[in-house]
Length: 215
Ligand SMILES: Cc1cn([C@H]2C[C@H](O)[C@@H](COP(=O)(O)OP(=O)(O)OP(=O)(O)O)O2)c(=O)[nH]c1=O
Image 1 (cartoon, protein in one colour):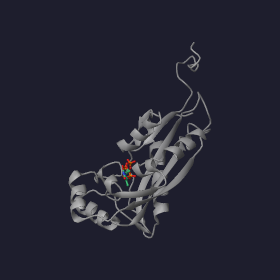
Image 2 (cartoon, rainbow, N blue to C red):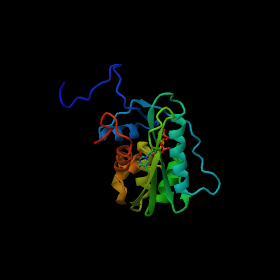
Image 3 (cartoon, rainbow, N blue to C red):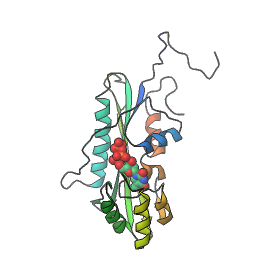
Image 4 (cartoon, rainbow, N blue to C red):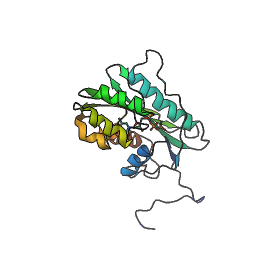
């Protein structure tokens, strides 16, 4: 057997729990792939993302990341580790919506123009009940983003290209909006939807079987 190959038990299964991404976001899947992680399964969740009355951005994003992970974990009977994440854009205590129409996206861009804002991304790991050794853990990553002042025609162009669709705060840093972002302080991957360093740290903190998910 080559040295690099892990021994496979007689039943042909490795004893590494399944890794499940609780997200319908193609970006989170692509981000995991960027660091060499391909989940065994992807489960989209239908969690109500509406903030509760008076709920602050940090509390909301953590609650939603946990809810997505818990929701997917409840659907698995096998030993698995579930990753849930959520991203929220906030100006002070104000939580911006996830843009689902042009009007909302335009209002977000007007508000963000010439200002600093925060992008909060929470990632929550939840083992299923069939994997009692797994560790439930989570991280919250805060990134400061500064837009320069946007002209009306710049806003029009950002609306026309459609990058805003389904994005927190109505923009995508990985899209044309990057031409208007003066500075970020924090984690670029967290703004796109999953903080890769912190996610890798959480995976490294799991009990290691068959070498774990990441070096
Ligand atoms: C600010 C910003 C957000 N986003 C994305 C990240 C998230 O996918 C999305 C915010 O919505 P989320 O509710 O966090 O995620 P989602 O609806 O895309 O997927 P799921 O709930 O199934 O996991 O906005 C970008 O892609 N680029 C950006 O610059």
